[in-house]
Structures are given as C-alpha cells and as structure tokens.
Image 1 (spheres, rainbow, N blue to C red):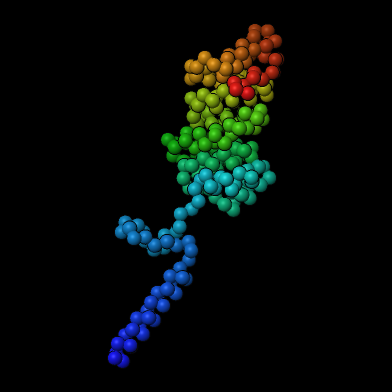
Image 2: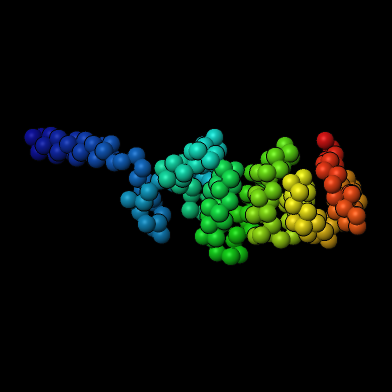
Amino acid sequence: MDRVFHIAGWSFVAVCAAIVVQARRPAGIVASSDPGDPGVGAPAAVASAEEWFRRAKPYCNAVEVTVLQRQEHAPATVAGQGYQAACYALAGRIDDARRAIDALPEDQRPRAAGIVFEVGHPVADAGDDRSAGPIMELVVDYWPNHYMALYHAGMAEYMLGQHALAQRNLEAFLRFYGERDGWRSNAEDVLARLRDPEGRGSEDRRRPREPGA
C-alpha cells in the first residue's frame, strides 16, 4: 500500500510541475501540433496590416509620422508596405512612401500602390488638391492605367495650375476610361480649357462638379 501512495504522490508532483512550466511560458510564444511547423518558440502572429493602419492613422501626419514608424513598424507583407506607404503619403512624405513601395518585388508594387489610392481617395474627394495631386501621381507611377488615379491627379494638377501634368493625366484617363458619364465629361471639359489656343480656357480654374456630388 505504501508503494501505491508513493507512486501517486510523485505523479501529483509531476503534474504540478507541468502546470508551473506552462504558466511561466511567455504569452507571445505558441506551440504547434503541426509536424511541419517550427514548433515551440515560434512568435505569435503579429497584427494584420489593416489593424496596424487603424492604430497608426491618427499619427500619419508630418509631425508624428517619424516617431510612429520608428516605434511600430507595419507588418512585413505587401499590404503592410502598402499601408506604410499610405501613412507616409498622408503625411506628405512622398519620397518615403516611394521607398516603402520600392522595398517590394516589382510585380507586387502595383498592389501596394492600390492601397495608397484607397487611403488617398477621400483626400481627393475632399478637394485637398495640394495633398491629393502628389498622392495620385505616386499611384500612377506604379499603376499607369489606374484610370481613377489619373483622373484625380489631373484634376488636382489643373486646379494647382500644373497644366502640362494635368493634360497628360487627363488624356491618359480618357484612353483607359470608355464610359460616357460624368467623369469622362469632366475630363473632356477641363482638356478643352487647357487646349484653348489663346489660353483663355486654361485660366478658368473652376472644378467641374463631380458625378454624384
């Protein structure tokens, strides 16, 4: 009987020891039952790119963006680089945004530029031409046939008096956009002003009413 109690006692000690070890395992460490997984010691999954940007967006301004990027990097994925570039773009740091996209393989850069467009689109819709123009030019550099980026870039540049850039982008927009709607009509209207041989039309800096506005 003493032997039975002896074995039971040591079994209880072993179970307690296992519980203590499990409790002391760092929260960021996960174990896997998958034989192909690196196993115990693999770091827990980082936040998604979208989650990172939701936290970062309030700090995507010229004053705070440097500290933000130094303290909390975006995930090392295509989406992460895209949101990092978008954050820099919102802060007016276009060169830094380009570097974030250029860090990706060439065939993945348009996808990251598409994220920059989605983030920058509300800026263009709000009529902030000084911010929207460079953001949309950035998108076009990596995605040359992105017709809405071409449209917004051209409109912003027209309002800023950058007529050569505006004409180039709006002509490209018309090549890629075949719908007969308000977007096309606006682009044709502005191009007609820019092409006025005596320059009178190009001085009319009124923004055409956006479709649906």
